[in-house]
Length: 271
Image (cartoon, rainbow, N blue to C red; front, side):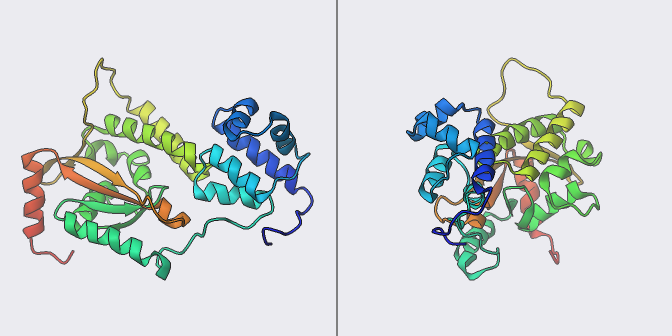
Protein backbone atom coordinates (compact mmCIF):
# COMPACT_ATOMS: atom_id res chain seq x y z
CA UNK A 1 0.00 0.00 0.00
CA UNK A 2 1.46 3.39 -0.92
CA UNK A 3 1.11 6.63 0.97
CA UNK A 4 -1.58 7.72 -1.52
CA UNK A 5 -3.61 4.52 -1.24
CA UNK A 6 -7.20 4.74 -0.07
CA UNK A 7 -7.68 3.77 3.54
CA UNK A 8 -9.36 0.40 4.10
CA UNK A 9 -12.44 0.07 6.36
CA UNK A 10 -11.80 0.36 10.11
CA UNK A 11 -8.39 1.98 9.53
CA UNK A 12 -9.58 5.22 11.11
CA UNK A 13 -10.80 3.45 14.24
CA UNK A 14 -7.61 1.33 14.46
CA UNK A 15 -5.48 4.44 14.13
CA UNK A 16 -7.60 6.34 16.64
CA UNK A 17 -7.29 3.59 19.24
CA UNK A 18 -3.52 3.42 18.85
CA UNK A 19 -3.16 7.21 18.95
CA UNK A 20 -5.22 7.37 22.14
CA UNK A 21 -3.07 4.64 23.68
CA UNK A 22 0.16 6.43 22.83
CA UNK A 23 -1.21 9.71 24.19
CA UNK A 24 -2.32 8.18 27.49
CA UNK A 25 1.03 6.41 27.82
CA UNK A 26 2.58 9.87 27.80
CA UNK A 27 0.13 11.05 30.44
CA UNK A 28 -1.19 13.74 28.11
CA UNK A 29 -4.77 14.96 27.82
CA UNK A 30 -6.25 15.71 24.41
CA UNK A 31 -5.95 19.41 25.26
CA UNK A 32 -2.26 19.07 26.10
CA UNK A 33 -1.38 17.09 22.95
CA UNK A 34 -3.38 19.42 20.73
CA UNK A 35 -1.50 22.36 22.27
CA UNK A 36 1.88 20.68 21.66
CA UNK A 37 0.97 19.85 18.05
CA UNK A 38 -0.89 23.13 17.43
CA UNK A 39 -4.04 21.48 16.18
CA UNK A 40 -7.59 21.84 17.46
CA UNK A 41 -8.74 19.62 20.30
CA UNK A 42 -11.87 18.90 18.28
CA UNK A 43 -9.86 17.52 15.35
CA UNK A 44 -7.72 15.39 17.69
CA UNK A 45 -10.88 14.06 19.33
CA UNK A 46 -12.29 13.14 15.91
CA UNK A 47 -9.07 11.35 14.99
CA UNK A 48 -9.10 9.29 18.18
CA UNK A 49 -12.79 8.47 17.80
CA UNK A 50 -12.29 7.30 14.20
CA UNK A 51 -14.56 10.08 12.88
CA UNK A 52 -11.73 11.67 10.88
CA UNK A 53 -9.09 10.07 8.66
CA UNK A 54 -5.53 11.21 9.23
CA UNK A 55 -3.18 12.23 6.46
CA UNK A 56 0.36 10.86 6.39
CA UNK A 57 1.67 14.31 7.29
CA UNK A 58 -0.70 14.57 10.27
CA UNK A 59 0.39 11.17 11.60
CA UNK A 60 4.06 12.15 11.48
CA UNK A 61 3.21 15.51 13.07
CA UNK A 62 1.42 13.78 15.96
CA UNK A 63 4.22 11.23 16.32
CA UNK A 64 6.71 14.07 16.60
CA UNK A 65 4.60 15.70 19.30
CA UNK A 66 4.51 12.39 21.18
CA UNK A 67 8.31 11.93 20.85
CA UNK A 68 7.87 8.46 19.42
CA UNK A 69 10.76 6.28 18.27
CA UNK A 70 11.15 5.46 14.58
CA UNK A 71 9.66 2.02 15.16
CA UNK A 72 6.64 3.49 16.96
CA UNK A 73 6.17 6.08 14.22
CA UNK A 74 6.12 3.30 11.63
CA UNK A 75 3.52 1.47 13.71
CA UNK A 76 1.32 4.55 13.85
CA UNK A 77 1.64 5.02 10.08
CA UNK A 78 0.71 1.39 9.49
CA UNK A 79 -2.37 1.77 11.67
CA UNK A 80 -3.31 4.77 9.55
CA UNK A 81 -2.98 2.78 6.33
CA UNK A 82 0.35 4.18 5.15
CA UNK A 83 3.75 2.73 4.37
CA UNK A 84 6.58 3.12 6.95
CA UNK A 85 8.63 6.30 6.93
CA UNK A 86 11.79 4.66 8.26
CA UNK A 87 13.52 1.50 6.99
CA UNK A 88 14.40 -1.38 9.30
CA UNK A 89 17.41 -2.98 7.64
CA UNK A 90 18.75 -6.41 8.68
CA UNK A 91 21.72 -6.09 11.02
CA UNK A 92 24.18 -7.60 8.53
CA UNK A 93 22.91 -5.67 5.51
CA UNK A 94 25.26 -3.52 3.44
CA UNK A 95 23.36 -0.40 4.49
CA UNK A 96 24.37 -0.90 8.12
CA UNK A 97 27.98 -1.92 7.46
CA UNK A 98 29.45 1.57 8.14
CA UNK A 99 27.59 1.81 11.43
CA UNK A 100 28.62 -1.65 12.63
CA UNK A 101 32.23 -1.06 11.64
CA UNK A 102 32.28 2.15 13.70
CA UNK A 103 30.96 0.24 16.72
CA UNK A 104 33.41 -2.63 16.25
CA UNK A 105 36.34 -0.26 15.86
CA UNK A 106 35.34 1.46 19.10
CA UNK A 107 35.18 -1.91 20.88
CA UNK A 108 38.64 -2.87 19.57
CA UNK A 109 40.13 0.40 20.74
CA UNK A 110 38.44 0.05 24.13
CA UNK A 111 40.10 -3.28 24.92
CA UNK A 112 41.19 -4.61 27.36
CA UNK A 113 38.21 -2.95 29.03
CA UNK A 114 34.80 -4.55 28.34
CA UNK A 115 32.57 -3.28 25.52
CA UNK A 116 29.38 -4.68 24.08
CA UNK A 117 26.65 -3.94 21.55
CA UNK A 118 23.00 -4.60 22.36
CA UNK A 119 19.65 -3.62 20.89
CA UNK A 120 17.01 -1.51 22.62
CA UNK A 121 15.53 -4.62 24.19
CA UNK A 122 18.87 -5.31 25.87
CA UNK A 123 19.75 -8.39 23.82
CA UNK A 124 23.48 -8.89 23.47
CA UNK A 125 24.56 -8.71 19.82
CA UNK A 126 28.36 -8.49 20.00
CA UNK A 127 31.04 -8.15 22.67
CA UNK A 128 34.79 -8.00 22.96
CA UNK A 129 36.70 -10.71 24.85
CA UNK A 130 36.59 -9.08 28.29
CA UNK A 131 32.86 -8.30 27.97
CA UNK A 132 32.18 -11.90 26.96
CA UNK A 133 34.04 -12.97 30.10
CA UNK A 134 31.78 -10.78 32.27
CA UNK A 135 28.70 -11.98 30.41
CA UNK A 136 29.64 -15.60 31.04
CA UNK A 137 29.95 -14.88 34.77
CA UNK A 138 26.32 -13.77 34.77
CA UNK A 139 25.11 -16.57 32.50
CA UNK A 140 26.41 -19.34 34.77
CA UNK A 141 25.74 -21.90 32.04
CA UNK A 142 22.30 -20.54 31.04
CA UNK A 143 21.50 -19.93 27.39
CA UNK A 144 20.26 -16.38 27.83
CA UNK A 145 21.42 -13.35 25.84
CA UNK A 146 19.21 -10.69 27.41
CA UNK A 147 21.15 -8.58 29.91
CA UNK A 148 18.09 -7.68 31.98
CA UNK A 149 16.81 -11.25 32.29
CA UNK A 150 20.25 -12.39 33.41
CA UNK A 151 19.90 -10.03 36.37
CA UNK A 152 16.24 -10.73 37.17
CA UNK A 153 15.46 -14.36 36.36
CA UNK A 154 18.22 -16.36 38.02
CA UNK A 155 19.25 -16.80 41.66
CA UNK A 156 22.92 -16.55 40.70
CA UNK A 157 22.61 -12.79 40.03
CA UNK A 158 22.66 -12.01 43.74
CA UNK A 159 25.82 -14.07 44.07
CA UNK A 160 27.55 -12.58 41.03
CA UNK A 161 26.57 -8.92 41.49
CA UNK A 162 27.72 -7.56 44.84
CA UNK A 163 25.49 -4.48 44.68
CA UNK A 164 22.51 -6.02 42.87
CA UNK A 165 19.83 -3.72 44.45
CA UNK A 166 21.67 -0.61 43.23
CA UNK A 167 22.13 -2.05 39.73
CA UNK A 168 18.47 -3.10 39.50
CA UNK A 169 17.29 0.35 40.60
CA UNK A 170 19.53 2.07 38.05
CA UNK A 171 18.33 -0.19 35.24
CA UNK A 172 14.70 0.20 36.25
CA UNK A 173 14.92 3.99 36.06
CA UNK A 174 16.69 3.78 32.70
CA UNK A 175 14.12 1.44 31.14
CA UNK A 176 11.18 3.50 32.40
CA UNK A 177 12.75 6.46 30.60
CA UNK A 178 13.29 4.42 27.43
CA UNK A 179 9.66 3.30 27.50
CA UNK A 180 8.56 6.91 27.05
CA UNK A 181 9.94 6.84 23.51
CA UNK A 182 9.36 3.18 22.73
CA UNK A 183 5.66 3.53 22.07
CA UNK A 184 4.12 0.44 23.64
CA UNK A 185 7.04 -1.96 23.20
CA UNK A 186 5.64 -5.06 24.91
CA UNK A 187 9.03 -6.74 25.36
CA UNK A 188 10.50 -3.62 26.95
CA UNK A 189 7.44 -3.35 29.20
CA UNK A 190 7.97 -6.97 30.23
CA UNK A 191 11.59 -6.21 31.15
CA UNK A 192 10.46 -3.21 33.21
CA UNK A 193 8.01 -5.46 35.12
CA UNK A 194 10.72 -8.05 35.73
CA UNK A 195 12.92 -5.34 37.20
CA UNK A 196 10.12 -4.18 39.51
CA UNK A 197 9.64 -7.73 40.77
CA UNK A 198 13.39 -8.19 41.26
CA UNK A 199 13.58 -4.88 43.12
CA UNK A 200 10.84 -6.04 45.47
CA UNK A 201 12.94 -9.13 46.20
CA UNK A 202 16.19 -7.12 46.50
CA UNK A 203 15.11 -3.67 47.73
CA UNK A 204 17.54 -0.79 47.66
CA UNK A 205 18.15 0.53 51.18
CA UNK A 206 16.98 4.14 51.62
CA UNK A 207 19.68 6.73 52.17
CA UNK A 208 19.48 10.51 52.35
CA UNK A 209 22.08 11.24 49.67
CA UNK A 210 23.07 9.03 46.76
CA UNK A 211 26.62 8.70 45.47
CA UNK A 212 27.33 10.32 42.09
CA UNK A 213 28.36 6.90 40.80
CA UNK A 214 26.51 3.58 40.81
CA UNK A 215 29.12 1.06 39.70
CA UNK A 216 28.56 -2.51 38.62
CA UNK A 217 30.45 -4.63 41.17
CA UNK A 218 30.95 -8.24 40.12
CA UNK A 219 32.21 -11.10 42.25
CA UNK A 220 34.57 -12.69 39.71
CA UNK A 221 36.95 -15.62 40.29
CA UNK A 222 39.84 -13.14 40.32
CA UNK A 223 38.14 -10.93 42.94
CA UNK A 224 35.76 -7.99 42.93
CA UNK A 225 35.54 -6.02 39.67
CA UNK A 226 34.12 -2.50 39.93
CA UNK A 227 32.97 -0.88 36.69
CA UNK A 228 31.13 2.20 35.49
CA UNK A 229 29.58 2.32 32.05
CA UNK A 230 29.03 4.74 29.20
CA UNK A 231 26.15 4.05 26.80
CA UNK A 232 26.22 5.57 23.33
CA UNK A 233 23.95 5.43 20.32
CA UNK A 234 23.99 6.98 16.86
CA UNK A 235 22.69 10.50 16.48
CA UNK A 236 22.60 10.12 12.71
CA UNK A 237 20.92 7.55 10.54
CA UNK A 238 17.20 7.19 9.91
CA UNK A 239 17.01 3.42 10.12
CA UNK A 240 15.07 1.70 12.90
CA UNK A 241 17.81 -0.89 13.43
CA UNK A 242 20.55 1.75 13.63
CA UNK A 243 18.63 3.83 16.17
CA UNK A 244 18.04 0.73 18.27
CA UNK A 245 21.74 -0.13 18.60
CA UNK A 246 23.43 0.61 21.92
CA UNK A 247 27.17 0.56 22.57
CA UNK A 248 28.09 0.12 26.22
CA UNK A 249 31.66 0.79 27.28
CA UNK A 250 32.81 -0.26 30.75
CA UNK A 251 35.59 1.52 32.63
CA UNK A 252 37.38 0.38 35.80
CA UNK A 253 36.63 2.46 38.88
CA UNK A 254 39.66 1.28 40.85
CA UNK A 255 43.23 0.13 40.29
CA UNK A 256 42.50 -3.50 41.16
CA UNK A 257 39.90 -3.77 38.39
CA UNK A 258 42.15 -1.98 35.91
CA UNK A 259 45.01 -4.35 36.66
CA UNK A 260 42.70 -7.37 36.43
CA UNK A 261 41.68 -6.51 32.86
CA UNK A 262 45.26 -5.75 31.85
CA UNK A 263 46.24 -9.19 33.13
CA UNK A 264 43.25 -10.75 31.42
CA UNK A 265 44.36 -9.28 28.07
CA UNK A 266 47.87 -10.76 28.47
CA UNK A 267 46.65 -14.28 29.19
CA UNK A 268 47.04 -16.71 26.27
CA UNK A 269 43.58 -17.70 25.15
CA UNK A 270 41.50 -18.80 22.17
CA UNK A 271 38.87 -16.15 22.98
